[in-house]
Length: 437
Image 1 (cartoon, rainbow, N blue to C red):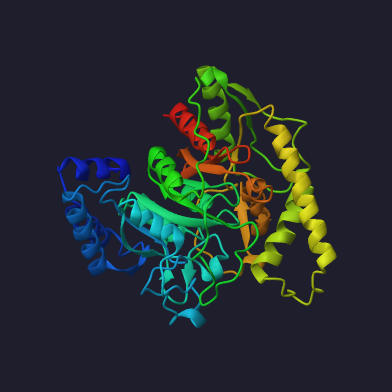
Image 2 (cartoon, rainbow, N blue to C red; image 1 turned 135 degrees about the vertical axis):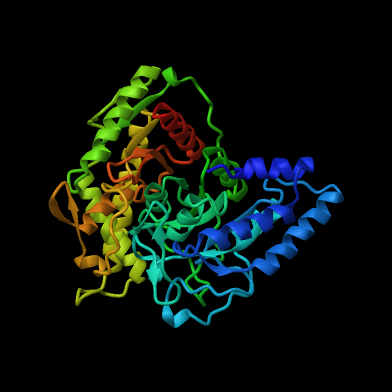
């Protein structure tokens, strides 16, 4: 894409080369021209965006500046924006209208961003494709027959199509990282608790945020991702030390004991390992410091299902007892400590974001859905093992593109780092992405 990055846009507005209103009008025109067959920007707030942009220009004339000065962007539908619907793709929430902006939205606006509207999601944010009865289906810009991912599928598709340079998503089962991978853009799942989730509630509620869930940015450029992370963070996060490539030790995984990986992704990881070694990076392919990944996945799925269902028993199962929940939390803590020990040896683990690239649209309910990987059928649910590598131990992870598969679909992988080392994850992703260019 030749469109400016978020940082470049803010610099151009700052210098007087353009204005917030001109950039907003250009983004609106891109959405009008490109979004029809994609269906990414499903809630459009263009008139108020024009007023926001004019206000940014007025304030700039009086000396205002901000890191996102005049940058037009969209946010995931699940974030509250005052005066706009927040449905989470649920028919029963079609008429819910938020009264206030989410904290993250307020921070973006305070930084100078102009919010154009909201992007599509699956119902309840509970799928890796974005199709719902309120707004319909989002298609992958690279191939409209394929999914854009979920639950931040509209967000990643809007970025990939060049409509906007920056987006705001959320992630509990790969909902930032998988759409980023499927669309060939960047997405960061922050350390759990690093960013305020107020205003990212199930429609009409205001209770405690769910376990495992985080919010975070998506972008077309790594530098924009890092900038947005700092704007959104509750407290300053440690910056990457920008060491030379020879100063890094990275563990690269191309498999999981429970989930298969398509050959093009495994081969891309092999090339990445070779290219990083050429740059001087110390690369290893296995480690006895890894926790029991099978046990981690089983417990992650238990916690994920309990959290999404808010403890309501599913499919005739018995309710989870408080003792069982505390046992899960204990296992999660032990698993987190195991990963923390691993990161005393490695700067990052690079692994598949998902074991497949963007798959064809499939209305089959998630529990019954199958994938075909290298000619063999496999249950779709096993693929949550890859997002779960970072989600269950509450670690930061950056999804980034490293190439294309034989069908012309983006291949994305994730760089996982130690607790609160979010900027290191982005820095190592930037290094690895560059190694594949």
